[in-house]
Every structure is written in C-alpha cells, then in structure tokens.
Length: 513
Image 1 (cartoon, rainbow, N blue to C red):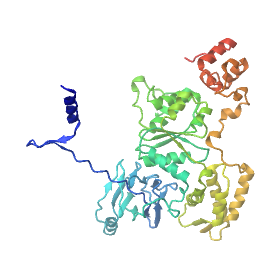
Image 2 (image 1 turned 135 degrees about the vertical axis):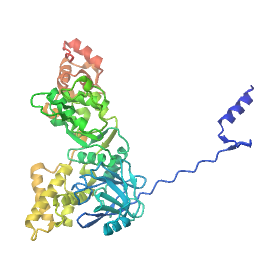
Image 3 (image 1 turned 180 degrees about the horizontal axis):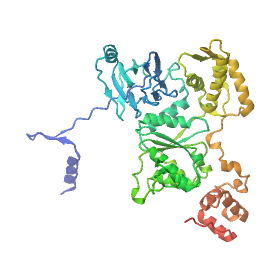
Image 4 (image 1 turned 90 degrees about the vertical axis):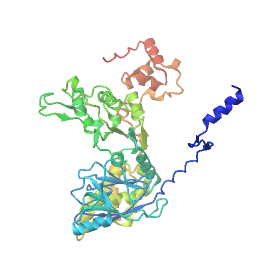
C-alpha cells in the first residue's frame, strides 16, 4: 500500500461518522451541546419554624455551609426534641442543597404549602426522605427536621452575586474566612485525609466538626486528644482498638476502641504534634490500612474488618519541629492541607462571632441580649492572643456581668464599659501580644531544651568536613539518638553522619526489635 493510500485510510478510520441502513454517505457527528453554566451563587432566605411556636428568619451566604439541629452551636437552631444535635446541613453546591447528617429521626423535604395544609387538617404529607445524598432545594420547599412540627421553609433567594455586607451570615465577611469555607467545602467532596493547621484557639476543632457535618458521613465524629493518650502499649491498644471481655483484670465487658467508633465517620486527631512515640506506629497502621488492628485480648483469627473512616489531623505547630516520625508526617500531609486563619486575619468577622457566642451563652429564648455598638467596636479592635477561645470567654464573662446589672433580667445590654473592664483584666493576665502564626509555635520539646550549638548550623550551608565531635553528639542528643533526624538537623546525608560517628567513636543506637 502506498504512503498516500495509508494516510487516507488512517484518516478515514479516525473520523467519527454515522451510516444509515441504505448505505448513505457518512456524515460527521453533530457536536455535543455545551453543558449549562453553573448556577450563579445567590444568598438564600430561610424561615425556621420551631415545634412549640416561634419563627426565626435567616439569610444564608452561598460561600459557606450551615448546620441545623437542636444544639446551641448549630448555625440554625431548631427548637424540638425530635431533632438530632447536628441534624443536617444546608449549603450551595451547584445550587442550594440539603443533606442529612445521619440524624436519628431523619430529614424530609416536601412543599411548604402542603405542609401547612397537613398541619391544619392532619392530612397526609407527601415528602421525600433524605438518604446520604444531597437533595436540591427550590423556593417553596420545606425541610422537616425530625417531625412535621419543626421545619425550615425555603424562601425566594436573593439576587445572584458576591456576598453583600448585609448578608445574614456576618461571621464570614473576611476573605480569610471565605477561603476557609471554600477549602472545607472542597474537602467535603472526597474522603481523603485533611491536615488543619493554625494557632491554638483559632477554631480547628470547629472546622473539623463543620467538615464532618457538610460531608454527610453516616458515622460519628470521634475526637482523640493525642496529648492525653497513654504511653503504655497495652493501654494504648485498648483505647484505640478496644478490648474483649476478660482481656485484663477488671475488663468485665468488651469495649469498642476510638478507631472503630469512628467507622463510617471521621477520626479527629487533635494536637497531633503531641502524639507519643509509642502511639505513632499504631496511627501509621490505621492510616495505611495495614497491620493488626486487633482489640486487646482478641485472637488472631478474630481480626475485624478495617474501619472506613476519614482522618483529620489538627496541629498548632510545624510538624517538622515536632517529634513525629518523618513517614507519619508525610502521611498526615498527603491529603488536603487547610490553614485555619487567626483573628488577626479576620477582624471583620469579630462582631458576627461575638453575636453568635452571645446567643449561644444566652440559651433562654425569652431573654434578649445584645451588644452596644461601642462594645462591638472595642472587641473588633482588641488583640486576641487566645484567638476564638479567648473571644468566647470574654463574651460569656461580659454577658454574665451584664445580667447581674440588668434591671429586669430580660433586656440585657453588654455595654462598652463592661467590655473595657474585662479586656483590662485579660491584658493583666495574658498581655495583648498579637497571635503568633502557627509555624512560630514551639513544641513542648523545644521549650524544654536549652539553646544548642547545632541550632546555629544552617542546613543548606553546612560543610560536613567542618563538623566537630561535639556538634555530632549534640545533634544526636537533641534528636534522642535518631540518626535520620540528626542528619537532617545537621544538613548532611545519613550515611555521612554515620561515617562521622564511626570516626569520632560515637556509638550507634541499638535497633529496637
């Protein structure tokens, strides 16, 4: 076959064409229509109807997700005992959608007009029960929260566009807060691990709770305080993986470990940089899905199926400055890394956050509490070395003082004088130094050790030939005999450090068996 004929044949084979049954000439396929453009982000107005009367109206920003339930920390509080603490989530995802958060009594979506009729004449309500999938919402829909007597009415959305200053959610006015909300919303679409970094008190636990809620996981959120885990391997296995009945003296019943309690949900490793070396191997087995996850006292043939869970780690220090082993550090950072901003970066959100904390502290619907405008201005201009945790404490203390000074105990106003008095006490205790960035926070190990001569060695510019016996010994002492980390600290290769150790007569640490 000639080159010209081969090219013609190859071109014919590459064409997409259709042939009818009468042998008509082939014709090119029509191009597929372009996909519809994504829905414009628009704020949504909703009305919350409580079971025992009372209606609250909210305007939801499309740049964050909103939890609803009967717990005070929910974004939309629904007053009914039939609702779960965190019942579900409203968020913008190619349009406004609702998701159930594995609630006890379930979530239904119907039409608001039909719901009103069914409440009046006790007729049958036709509603769709939500599963694990997100359900689109339209104006006139009603989201039933565990009962027909408590529901969220979807009103007409506001005009599309960027969030406005008068949006109902004023806890995410700053660009830093919106960036965090977008990052959490993106992470909620998959099941990879997430590493949250930020200063102490910035709200990393709240961010993890929010991510778990909007992800729609069927399981629980289990929080593990890594600093409080036992160092004894036997106790550690019992806490993480559980134990069987009779596994040790006093084990009268079997216990489910924290890891298996998070099956189908989320395991939050709070203060992961404080994880004891004995627990790091256990955690690495959980992350990689290998190793023996046996409960204490179980036989090898009783190995349970590995739990299906998402791991979220929260750290207030640089992992490189911690005592975590290198392979664990890289595994924790293999998924999404999300920075939780400090209040320095989100001062525009402080008034809204203060109002929310004030509402959480009030609890009593009959009591009306509010801030004087001058009080909010003082809070916004203050320095917060303790971040959100400190802001919440100040708000609660000021509210308590305002209640004691109120005339009727019903209309409570937090004045600028009360805020000024409390901030003066806070300054006397903590000072007003601004919050340090997360990577400037020293570890407890760094705080304990004295300044070292190896700290002055710059890793990129270190000359191995000029290393002294004392520098090598000091680096090994600081890193507790870990040759790999000591070599990294000195800025040399591991083999080079081992050769220097042999030359200076430094004994190599015995390998653990």
